[in-house]
Amino acid sequence: MPPENAPAAGNLDDDDYPAYTMGRAADVLGTTPAFLRAIGEAELIRPLRSEGGHRRYSRRQLRIAARARELVDQGTPVEAACRIISLEDQLDDALRRNREMSRRLAEHVADI
Image 1 (cartoon, rainbow, N blue to C red):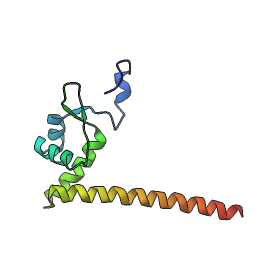
Image 2 (cartoon, helix red, strand yellow):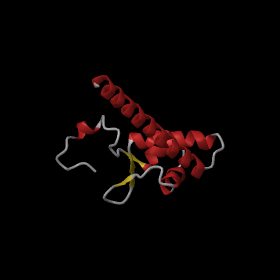
Image 3 (tube, one colour):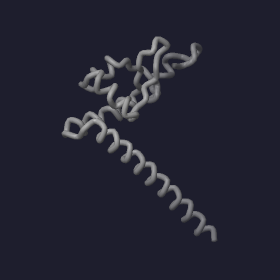
Image 4 (spheres, helix red, strand yellow):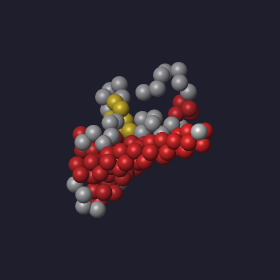
């Protein structure tokens, strides 16, 4: 949760701010709290906990959950959907690093 002196309006554009309760997140996604718990147990997302212990979700987590829901709606088991998303993220990260290293190599070769 944000520090007590943080301006509330500053969190409006923060994709990582845990603004959604479990019930609201489920409503937004058109799913159930059980689905959110399942993808949390699979460690696809890790909701933050309020002081009272309630799960809170960010917009970034809702986008990930929406992707999981899309796969599950297509017939993919929850655990497999979570693994697919994890692998997609790893691939995206590897491709980004590869592009960066290629750019650095091209700059280095140009300097020689």
